[in-house]
Image (cartoon, rainbow, N blue to C red; front, side, top):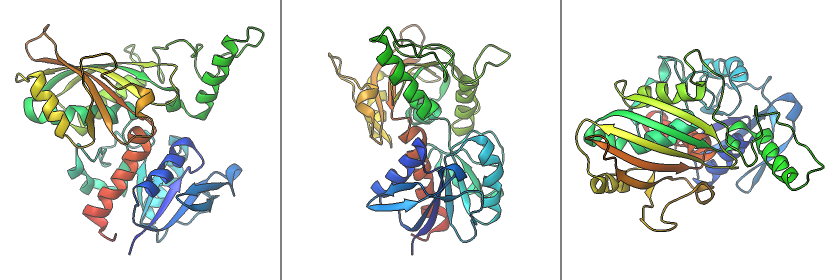
Length: 340
């Protein structure tokens, strides 16, 4: 006997990836319902070899469904997630709405699977921010060995993190560079994204940081250890899919770069590609469509006693969103619901 699964926001980029990954990983689903807003009602989406027709989120009855993977914004989630949870359907939410709620577990299955049992307080589980998800997969095994004190991270985040409109904006602006008679003014971003980088993701806060940077700080503390100090600079780059991060780590105990490399090679969800030669590292183009978080450029930081540098790359639509949500669903089924 398998699960009855709902995918909310099935016509969006992340919802589409959720369906792909559920099929690829052969998730034990007896029945899958795909929901969208009324304007997308009846749109057909693929699930493996099946074609499913979207149903209306506003009128859907979640009673009798085991779990719902939400891939809609916080505004819609605020309305419909409590309805699903109240009907007995466990919500796995990809928005930021519940990430900082003390009664909602924030989970990356390779990092803090034990937190899954906290779902029962609200019948809701939160998926972390895309930039946080890949970073904590890299940090946790190193923290277990040498206890991380401080992290300095700079991100290079692809436009797909902002949705389809941002992908279109990059594409149209790139074409316009070679056609001077055509102008494509920025709409999604405050400045041109084609052939440019923008050190600004989400809104600015009073201390000068952006909300994206604050998310990385708060979520790393909640997922791994509240004592870790994190400072982040988040940058949007003209890449379609795949987030990259330059991570500097300071640990309490000395950790040799060779031992760190060996630890990461054995870590769940991590793939180490680290050759000190031309091309001996992974870039965003190469990570697209893959489940792994790729680690390269592992090296000692000689400016502090216990320092390491590394380069971290992952498909943000997969590990940063859809894959992590499906992994949470697998964990929930395996450890709690135990039907499949």
